[in-house]
Length: 108
Image 1 (cartoon, rainbow, N blue to C red):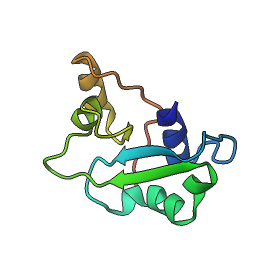
Image 2 (cartoon, helix red, strand yellow; image 1 turned 60 degrees about the vertical axis):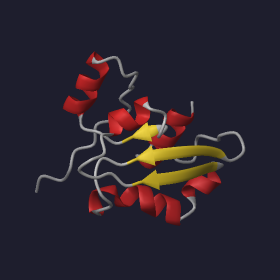
Image 3 (cartoon, rainbow, N blue to C red; image 1 turned 90 degrees about the horizontal axis):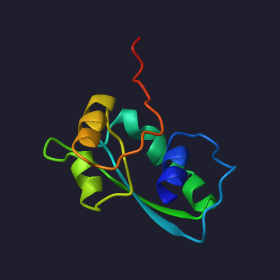
């Protein structure tokens, strides 16, 4: 349940309509190093949106040697940011991932 709450909050879906049990700890693993495409997660944290939902969110940056599906499969995160082809390949290998949304970068 924490995965659904954290992902929905991270994506800005139903931000105020969910309430978690007191201070649920949630770890979010980013796909890549901290950069603008992940700003929404950090802004939500900075503005206290996670706190308002009683979530204690830890955001872990990714990098070239970090594979989010491996991190979640190993219990190192509750929620990951990943691209659909990688997520589907992970599902085929037996990783129990649930896709909540597939945001696309601005292609302007």
